[in-house]
Length: 213
View (cartoon, rainbow, N blue to C red):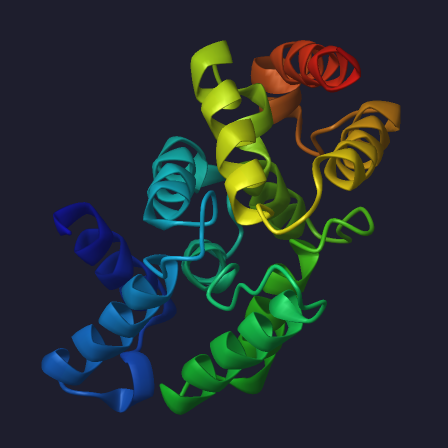
């Protein structure tokens, strides 16, 4: 928990406020509520492991963020609500994040930016801001992980969709992976393109071959 606690404190310190203008124990309660969400038993990939990997990824590029506290909080909240059968997870997570930021007494424009950063993780368009592209690249950094971690990720995704028949899952998963490969670039920032683009494409190609096998 120490890494998560440090990240949580850093994010709010960067915003210059405390969640819900709370005492430290109440602030920790909100953090623990989020940790409980990422620990839900139906999750396979969108877990504390993913949150920790996102925070570790942010540690390496924090200096690139225009508003580092907002980026870090967006990562904390981006998969807070996760129901594999729902289509509004990001919206509900973004609304929660916005409410928490407003409850802390932060300005409305800060809350709006955090909301937009969480919504960017829908991956349905290229984010309009550098911080949005940074959040999305951190979220997608798993695609450029080493082969063993990427293969574990694919197993974890399948676990989340265990209720979907194999033939249906293969078709839909193939569509998702192919859309990523069809992008001019998977990553929106130069830092991530230089480090992960080539390996991400190799991982995606290999996964497609396995689905076709």
